[in-house]
Image (cartoon, rainbow, N blue to C red; front, side, top):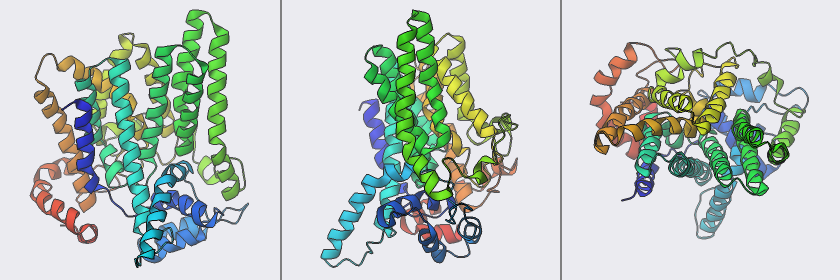
Length: 451
């Protein structure tokens, strides 16, 4: 079996884990864009929010107060901090779900064709899972063709990051967030950039890079910063070749096409909050000095490397490639640094209550470059099975954390040491069989009662 086919098999095995229910505040915000655009066409989310609150009034009391009872001053509409990109990406799956529901109803089905029932939620969930997996495949292809790490090293690196970091959680248990779509959009942009750099040819290649970069910003605004990666590359190669005109043309078409794709978000901003930009409730939380820049990485309770230690290894591999004069790694590291900066600039840098540092999921193809470099070094020296077993330690850590998080065996606001580490050994293993059984047979009971 080829490494790519192995990844496909692994994806199929994870599909039963995909949660087909919209629960959290962010999930409701993203899904409400989709339902409002498809059914109401008004971007007034009062009825969407009301539907979810009615289903869980106690659990969504804080959501009601923040997003439904408070309104944007300029429009009087309910607040929505989410971006419109995930809704647009989910829309083909959603349209298919609506068609299937309509056909089923002609044969006597009672499933409501209201945009809320389970087929519609499933469309968004499976859409995210598919997009996220495609993003991983693009990362693996880029590592193989342009990083030249070898198919096995690329596949092992991608699989390790998939299963050994919060990527697994947001592709399965919480797919209605934006992060799976974000992973795809950034992976697509970087894959197109690497292809354009390798060809060093037609300007249309750079148009496609700009389109993908605009999509990344449409899904999550901060991901537009990844455009600095192909932008820095285009500028550097133009200076090196002394062809400034060609470099300027590449930068111009990337910027123009990215801006064009971002127009739907500008229209959404204006419709929801009455201005051509994010809500002031969001922008006032930003501090350009990024006071939490180091904390987002190293804080023991909330830091990226505390939740996913494999990413520390991947970062070391990326820096090793940078110091080894890998130009691709250097501009990728610049893109990652900008993500660290913007995540450290937000008041809510800790992401308390979330599983891991989810805002870094889009950096998965960047981390893959570093991890693949280390795996490629290890493979000629030790057996592939030994490398896979080493990555398996990080997978065990991540999956066990997911169990702790789901069963509330840990403080869901932060990693509490040494309690969280002790629980990985004492509390999680005895519960695994029961958790797996309830997860596959009665997931709602598992959510309500735990084990």
